[in-house]
Length: 369
Image (cartoon, rainbow, N blue to C red):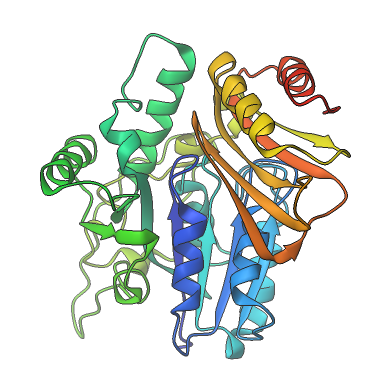
């Protein structure tokens, strides 16, 4: 029987720090040969570029971007062929890492890993949910009266529900009492999570992320005990391609969760309010003016995530913009020369592209379109 290729899914809400944590894991991979699939809801790939910057030209790491939507969801025709291509190169791949969009559930990938097309070559190693801990403690994931707040809280809860490991990220300035409160809140929202891990400086021990084998089948020589499978809702539901993977494994055999197609129906059918767009400017920017404009935009519109590379007036290097709600950082990238055009991705709930573009244009004195 051929050895199955382990797959780790990294999920988490917008701005949780998935890419930074993933980049750290890749840099500390030791001798592992990795294939990475990086999914972004926006039309340009910022996260893939960040990971590539950390990897350089290392032939032991293969990265593929999945922008323009949600990986493994109903209209994604690229995921299965990409995984089949990895399977064809199994002699050069030790582990697959999949970073989902911050607006996706990991169940879509879980489902396809059990399909007839992939079940004979891959097995889920673990699902990691990365959490923006200060945001969790600020009650921004509570179900509030606004549509956007409720939608974000629902997505966050579902991402935790299907995780094996929850990683508390952005914790460097938190004390023990705050960490204990964060753990209590995670356990209350997702009591079936197996492990909670702490990521100081966005770093996670490679042994706590890869090779966990949480979904390996349990084999016995003479007996076969199969965990009852939770209901598989939906008219298109069908038996799993590899039933033996449920042998004696109550959680990782999926008995503890319902992983049917209804848990991750196509994003726009589920909630069309989540929107993403890119704004571009050909003029060099003043750092303080742009930062002030972006903060004002985040207060005026329900922008939950902003990111991209910009060109400033006083430096030849590209500057990385990372925004989570009204938290904003601008950091020069010493290894990247600024492109002639600045590009910023905005993601939010019913955000207005025209208003954001007009605000940035007015406040910076440069055209944003």
